[in-house]
Structure formats: structure tokens, C-alpha cells
Image 1 (spheres, rainbow, N blue to C red):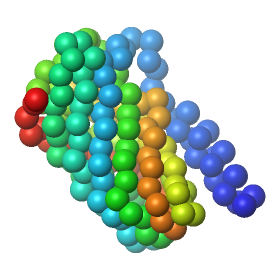
Image 2: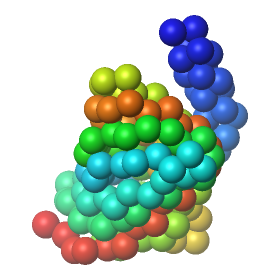
Image 3: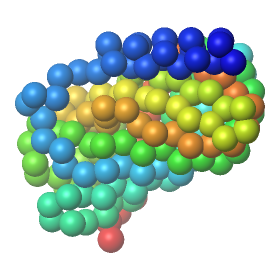
Length: 159
């Protein structure tokens, strides 16, 4: 139990240090992604995602397909889960496909039954979008992961 606490404290400190400045960014909505089951392969893992971006103004929904790859310690198995990010952008104009692109940052999670994780990612079109400050990742399984994550999003449309 002490090891898990130390891991969580270390991961939180790493993620806070990696977090870019939000002073010049607008909160434009929330990105909610649904993941498939994941098997950690000791040095990394990959998951397919189906994501919905809920834009704040005007209220709209944009659908994205994605893939998240983690490199670093990743041991265990988790069921399908959910990741949720606050979306910050350099301007408040968000349209279909704005979140398309590649995001990179730090991540970590722990699961002993119910699990939680955190991810700080920056990227998108012309590196103008930030997914942060921390995502909330929920899953069920037995897993310990910490390292670098790469999220790739491609647009599917809007509703």
C-alpha cells in the first residue's frame, strides 16, 4: 500500500511539472474518450479510443477516433474504461476537426480492482490545443503504469 501511495504522489508531481501554462488558453469544452481493454506489455501498451468532444460555445458535439500509446512501465490488465479531459485552446473558435492531431505528455495509472489514472497531453493542430490539466481515467483491473503517452485523434463528424 505504501508503494502505491508513493507511486501516486510521484506521478502527480510528474504530471504537474509537465503541465504547460494555462495563462493564455481558453477552456473550450471537454473531451470524453471510451477505451477498449488493455494489456500492459511491461514496456508499453496501445488502446483504441472512441471520443466525443463537447464544445462549450456554441454547444456542439464532435466525434473522434483515436489511439493512445504508452511507453514506460505498464504491467497488468484493465477492462474497457473512460478518459476525460478539460480542453484548452489558444482561441475560443473550435470547429469540426480542430482536435485532430497528435498529443504527447506524461501519464500514470494504478488499478487494484477499480483504478484511476492521470494524463497531461499537449498537441493537436499546430500545437494549439491542450488536454488538461489532468485527465481522469477510470478502469477496472490489475495494473501499474507510468511513462510517456501519445494520443492520436482523427475526426469522424459532428452532431
